[in-house]
Image (cartoon, rainbow, N blue to C red; front, side, top):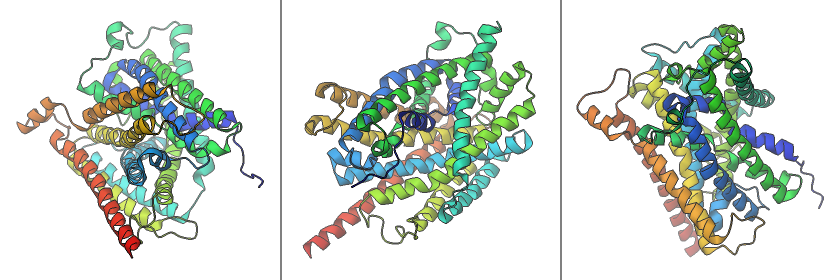
Length: 487
């Protein structure tokens, strides 16, 4: 049979992988918390986590090279259907928390695009932003149900522009300091580059690991890449190394041109302040720079909103066994869009947005909370993947594949090491520093900050409810299947 699938070149796959992972605003958020120690964080994470996890993904892709590889099929390889379902489900609910970070920032970007400033600054801004985010998400859901694809080409252009924006920032920052002979804005010393290894640093490590995610999403292109599986693996490994280098250079560039105090507790406006400072050095007006950066980020986020509103839902229902969630939620239209599932998703995201919007203090505290939760939940499906990998190397190492990460012992060691690292940073990201909890119990909460006990409860209960729901659905499905088999 003739293969009519369109083949993707190595360069195209490299750019797609780079675009899926590299996100300049992530660097700003991390720098707000840990400053120049962000450089050490990215160097460590690239070598110890990012490259090995990409090798693991490549190994699973190699095993499943004849399928449209995804996390469900990878986990199923060594753990079976139940664990594969839990892994796919955790990937889906991590995406729900991703919306709580994506949508508020989209509205802030829209504000900068239209007005050149952030209209959501103010005493009641947190709830207003949360409410506006709910409205925007329902609009995005409607667009996804209707299957409108107007934004697809614009999104691709905006995605490329966002990458170029980061590259341009790095180049101009280095030109300003090293060619124009200006002093760096921050002092680069052993002390400033060395992490403090406190609670905040390890919490931010979850953010860094999450920002390095995305290589697993390229598995669907394995059958479409020119040169086959070996070419595919070499390309994504090259891409992640380049991304790690770019993130590290971007951290250095921020330290070269942006004073530390500008970034402190500045999640809502940080990226605009950073580009305004750099633009000012080259005579670009603040208002023009704000609108330009806002437009690029707005278009990119709108595209992400429409794509990620529907794609994970479709992927979940295409992979898991039929009937797990019942018939109503699985109903699809003539285009295969599970419209009831999209509505249910919108209801859940509404709750996830409104709870912190009502119960958390300032806008900056709200954004920090949703960034934190997004990072923690994103890493959970990676835990399932690592368990599957450890079992693969322990019990099914003889499965034929074109790529392996070292010998059996090394593979098991790396799987366990990465699993322990993720468990640790997820814990540090979900639970606040004990001193903050004791202060809150004694009624000491800084002005504008949310109650750490309430924030922790929001995170923990969110995880428990979603995993509990998945276990109930799977248990009911297994029971029904057993009854059918008996009859």
